[in-house]
Amino acid sequence: MSAEPAALALFLLLACGTGSDDDSGATGDGGATGDGGGGADGGTDGGAPTDGAVLLTDAHNYSFSGVLDGPSFPLAELADSTISWGGLTEDLQCHALDPVADIDNVALMVFPYLTEQEVEQGLSTDTLEQVDVAVYLSVEPGDATEIHLSDLTFFGTQADIQTEFEAGSGAWLVVFTTGDTVGVGSRMIAFLTPTPGETATHAEVTDGCEVLDVDVSIDHAEPVLVDEGEAGALDWSGLTLTAQGQPFEPLSVSEILVARYDTQTVADLEARFLDIELLADGLWTMPHQSGTSADLSGLVDAQGAPFPGWQAGGTWLLALRCGTCPNPAPLFLAVVQPG
Image (cartoon, rainbow, N blue to C red; front, side, top):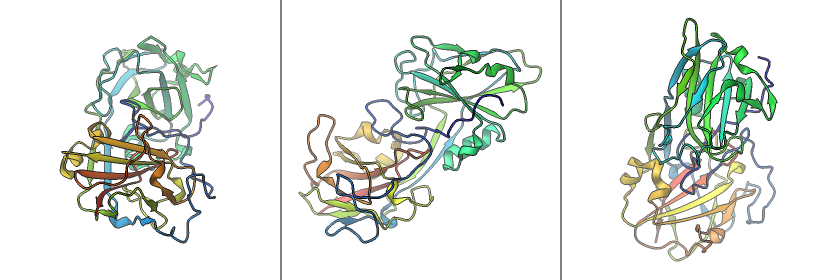
């Protein structure tokens, strides 16, 4: 294809942080990991555990799998078809969405050697690679809720991608995002399918509640035992697998999240996993720049108030996130038991 290949920048499709309701998770290009070195938050380079820190192990970690089934629109080949989303009022997580105010960027990715089903499977299992993507184009629609294929550019350079929209050219994935940072804030996906003999030239994208299905198990894992009344420190240098069973990159953690639920049980949270931040009665986060340990005294809530320490009562969750991984589902998530 004539449009320049772009770095693989997949997005907030699964689980937490799809760019609404002040979600703080984010993804970026590629899946790079940290380069080691102690950070300002007290992280170490890995290896020996940090003295006095709570050690996180694979036995503490939840399990997660997600299945995507995005809508597919058969369209006429080589036509400058339109894509509209004026009726898109709920996103992938079934959270409310304003199709004008919340959609800041529309992106197109073309996977020339994959089917739509293979792209969905790769997104679901976090196994897509940079070489799978041949084209990345985008447009900022402003107040509009409809674009033509010809509106999509390679960072401002005209692409005329409609001239290559023909059967056999691979899977054409459209991503609607909040914010204009590549790879961050995905709210909805859809496929455009060039189809011989088709005369339709319009794709109407509507609500995304049926697109994402997740299977989560938290209760099977061992709780993380912590001292009541303290914030303490964590060390994850011993983790070997992510929640999806992929190799854990210890230096890839870029954010730590702690949540408290006064009435929700673990079973409740498993059933409504996509809403775990919205359901929280207390929520504290902190960035993590490098290393495999962190002092939780850096945690703050949305108003900037510090984490008061672990308290008895309710349900507590701890999550480690990767902001540069293609799949933003927490790498690690566990129940915390103060005592």
